[in-house]
Length: 410
Image (tube, rainbow, N blue to C red):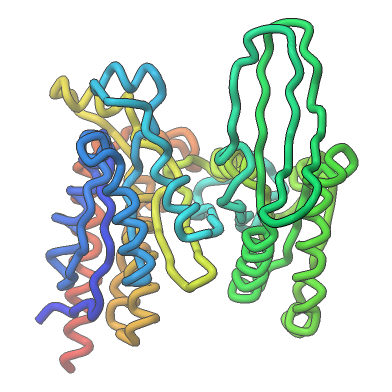
């Protein structure tokens, strides 16, 4: 009898090549081994357009209700994609919508294989990126300034009080302008989430901003983060965890000399950019796990990469592809492990561990998809297709799982 996941997991389907891989993972690596009920939401771009993006809100609400979600990569449409998919409009990023709804922090951690040497020689341990997932340019109002004139920021108190007006710039001709925001509740939630994650991972915390230039906006982040660190000093010291604040440019310079083993807490845009840099430095975006953690205790797991558009076009032509599925697999194992922890069903966690081991051991044996061919040592002489790579993981997992079940019966 297959082990059963007690509580449904919220599944968010996605787009393009990752949607194809997503289905393969379920059919080959999940359903044959365990029983799991999925609260399914189709976040493919066609359904988001059909529902006027209501499906994204519904999915976020379901994650808050059930506690654990797993998400496939999705398209965030620009003007080109609006034309390609005949959309009503350029719908917002589903990730940004879900992050805002859950007020979550995104943590990205490299998936390490022994035969993939980091591009930065000093990196020996994982570098985890903690990305503040609310506000800043992702919730900004921006516009093209049509001509000469003044752009100002105005604060109007909700109750009695004098409005505050700040001149941004007096334009002598066309240009661009933007107003962005954040709030103390979200900043503090971000800091607390980073502290809790660092305590669970037993890793030091870095935080970087540019308070020398942005004395109020970035400076406020620095102050609130420091207050939350101070409130947990006893816990951090007991765990041997150190906190370090640096200017963001210094943090980047120090990171290149670090051995790793840190949680780097980043503001929203910095986390968006540097998580990709760290992923590439450790090998590939296909080897990067990601989890969104909300202050209320909800978790959403996903791959850190996009929809692999170029491979999808080849797939539509009937051509073979070689797409790395490891990060998507780890999204599923992360969700299963968290569900196991919450439901107190250790056999589900054991299954997740075995699936991860099957994937990593395959890579360490030299069997890889095309993106990893020249990253492993020694380089691979051939590569697997998308499906054959999953089939070989399945074969290894089947042996592991059969052996374990025999031990359980005895």
